[in-house]
Length: 130
Image (cartoon, rainbow, N blue to C red; front, side):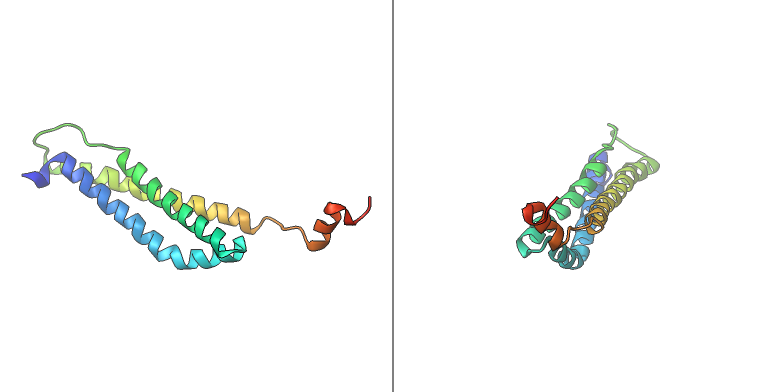
């Protein structure tokens, strides 16, 4: 039976957890785009960082899920089938959380980094005297 072969169970689980990551990225896409346009100043820069963040979150999830390949067994028991599917799913969800948290931390750092005022910029260019 194809459905109980460890490799099919494993890859089905990887597909499910990757689809979950894509769904989360699609859900966060509009709010993240609005925030990035405000932070980056231009739509082109915001689109780049949106694409970069989306790819990062999905790939982090995928790599984490692929971290635990199934062992080689011809006739796994029901509990082994469950373990074969649970390990990559759990790792994928952790990878998804790591990816989202990393993007969020980078945004927090970027949001709270003070931007020099125009007068400080003018002084740095030689407009003010020391």
